[in-house]
Image (cartoon, rainbow, N blue to C red; front, side, top):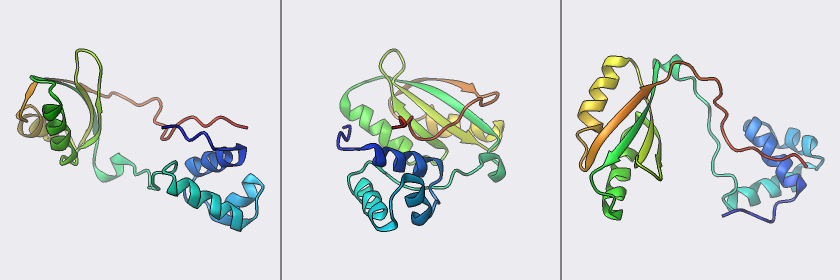
Length: 158
């Protein structure tokens, strides 16, 4: 649910933090026109409200040997709520699945999967995904290149 209590300073805080989550509170306060204590209070309020969900490092997959990114379109045999939840539970336990989105339409889920190479992806596909309970079909597309990979959401400037 949208937080409608955000003012222009909150939006600037969010934009700065989304661009650089390691910025110090003093630097952040200066950028948004506050002193450090009220800036920290606002940050904590944004965290407590759930507007800021987490902080993390954006790790280069290739640097860790993950050279392949695949999108898998998964159709299930049954779309009963218990079956949908069971599939979601299954993919949450698979570290190679980095994203899982339930879709409206012919395809039930789209997954973003990383793999070290084509052979390891093939093994993952046959042993972990197509063999999962209730899976009817899986269609995959390997990425050739990524033109844009921007985390977060667009934050309007005040």
